[in-house]
Image (cartoon, rainbow over the protein chains, first blue to last red):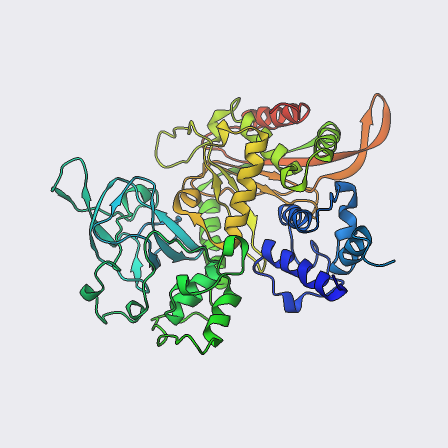
Length: 84
Length: 406
């Protein structure tokens, strides 16, 4: 999976839990909760979707590492062992 | 046309989900109506057979106008013309319904939307409010659009995509007597609806307010340990514990649960617990979890997931937005300390939870950091007093100290 694919997959899951967000307008450093307005339920649903897609456990302690798309992509890249 | 809120004057029929000749049971979803709160699924209030449809998709009707005629089942052949009223709490008496698509010839070209292939009754299409309205405006049947949202829900982008798909002709756009500046949730309309409800609340309801800080350390510890063993889809949110404690506490102060619709006020036995859900882009909606008194924490969590998701994608039902007996408004994780709410009429109490925050907490004569939340009560002084309200908040506190209780 290329970084581009990963980003696409992440944005797909993000816009699925928040259908009123437009994937085109989401910035990599947008804070999911403060900037994009996800509430704790939306965020948990996103974690659930990423869990189902990638099979990662994503414990609560790691939630801060998903705070923005950029952070989340770095986290997923690391956890999936995609690059070093 | 049912009233879906104290200040709704009219609604637009977006879609029929049944047709003349169909048998319907109480609670079946029969139509979708576009309101200030988005697209709402309308449930029928009694069983019967749909005799005739009196309104067409695309039509805007005043509250109380008949939508369709229903033959009651108990007296075979006897027509029971469904009466409608204009009182806000009569939703059960206002929802006649039927579907036109069984006999398209009967409705030739009287309304532009009927030129579209009408959706077949059993195939209910999941769609966001924005998509639903846009599709109706364009005269495109929802079931001809491939959905890309959750559960293949049709999203606004799918409708636009379908519009650009030259291989599938799009009917001439439907005419609407009141064009929307923007499809879907009309924020200005929603703001007006909120304004009307809140003005009514402040005009009619003598509010009193109480505030109490609750130590959440026990709940937090329990929650972290519980969630550590669960996959994300099974994890609980603190919000579910707060809601569960609130619903349970009503058992001790039942007069805070109900709808003030006449003198004398009679509390409600079932707890239909409204949750204020903020909409991105502004506004909020407070759909109710029906019969929350029978739910344990896991069930409340599932119900919250469900209702938040459906608030986002436009699958709320009229019972959920008209039957609430109390509302919880919660600021979530990234807000301020306390929320002093305005009661959603005709309810008689609103419980506000601020954002849980680490605060210096006094324990065994030493100060330690601990998670705390400020809970507030906005109570209707016509039906309860501060003393009873205090008992209620103290009970929520007590129950949150035993989070392991299902």
